[in-house]
Image 1 (cartoon, rainbow, N blue to C red):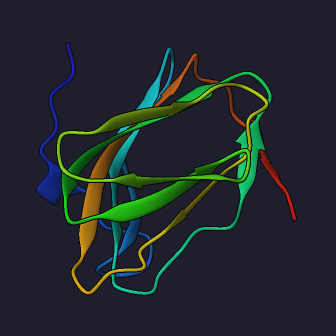
Image 2 (image 1 turned 180 degrees about the vertical axis):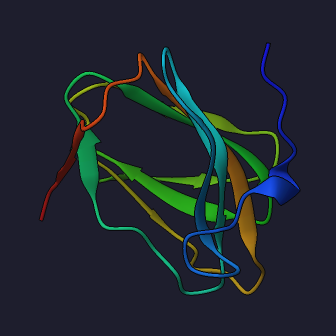
Length: 112
């Protein structure tokens, strides 16, 4: 059994970016926040799928260069080998839960 509260972890960039709540052994999971105008570099995973469940705001998620505008309640998954890129093109902060499985570190490949 493992219990953690989100407040026990910090976002990578202060008030935004990823905040891992667990890293393995079977999955990685956390919260990611994007301020207006922020984005992550396009990347893919060879083994893991990555899912995002939108909690707040609105965010554009590109999977293999196809744009998906996501709102609270949406769940989107990038399968292994599918490149994905997230960008907040809107005026309010966006926040999502992310899940990576099956966990393998390292498994992130940045793409152009």
